[in-house]
Length: 279
Image (cartoon, rainbow, N blue to C red; front, side):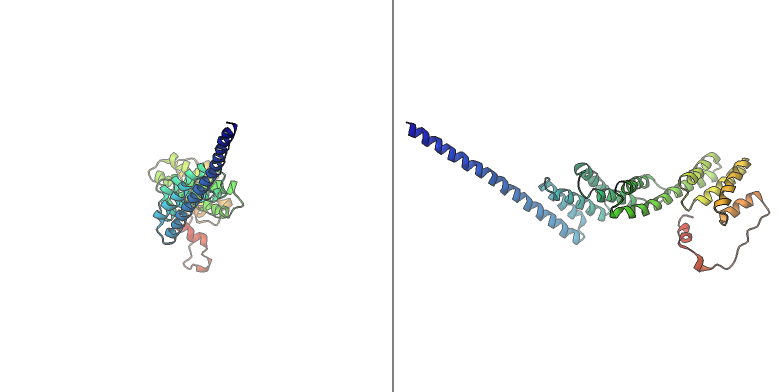
C-alpha cells in the first residue's frame, strides 16, 4: 500500500517537473517567434522605404511595433513609421503617431529626434504669412524645447537656425496685418501691430520699417512727440537705412533723397536678397 502511494507521488512529481520545464520552453519559443515576426516586418518596412513605398513602409513598421511591443525595437518601429509618413507628406498622420510615441515611450533614447520631427512636420505645414499662423507657433514651441532641453544634440543647431526663420515669418505676419489696418485707416490696430514687431521681433529684417510706420502714423494722427521718439530710435540704430530717410522726410517735407543710378552689385549682401522675399 505504502509502495503504491510512493509510486503515485513519484509519478505526479515527474509530471509536474516535466510540465514546469515545458512551460518556459513554450514561452521561449513563443517569444522567439514574436521576435522573428517583428524582425521580418521591420525589414519589410525598410525595404519598402528604400523603394519609396513610404505609406506601406509605415504600415509595416507599425505592424512590427504591435507584434512585439515589449521589444527595444518597438519605439524605433514607431519612429520609423512616423518618418515614413513624413516622407510622403502625410504630416497629420506623422504628428498623430509621433504624439503617441512621446506618450508611450517617454524614456526612449531617441526622444529628442521625435520632438525635432514634430517641429519639422509643423514647419513643413507653414504656407505664408497671410494664412494660419498656428503651424508657425507649434514649430516654434518645439524648436525652443529642443534648444532648451537638448542643447547638445545634433538637432539643436538646426532648431536654432529655424527659430530665426520662424521669427521672420511671425514678424512678416504682423507687418502684413499692420499694413492692412493702416490702409483701412485703423490707426490703433496698425500701431499695436507695428509695436509688436519692434518689441518682440527687434532682430528681424522688419524692425526698420515698423519703426518708420510708427513715426508716420503717430505724426499723421497728431502725436508729434511720440512720432519723434520713434524717429530718434530709428536714427540711432539705423541711420543709414532707407526707412530713416523716409522718416526724416516726414518732419522735413522739402528733403529729397539722393539716389544713385549706379549700384555696386558686389555690395548686395545676402540679407538684402532675403529682404526682398518679404517686401
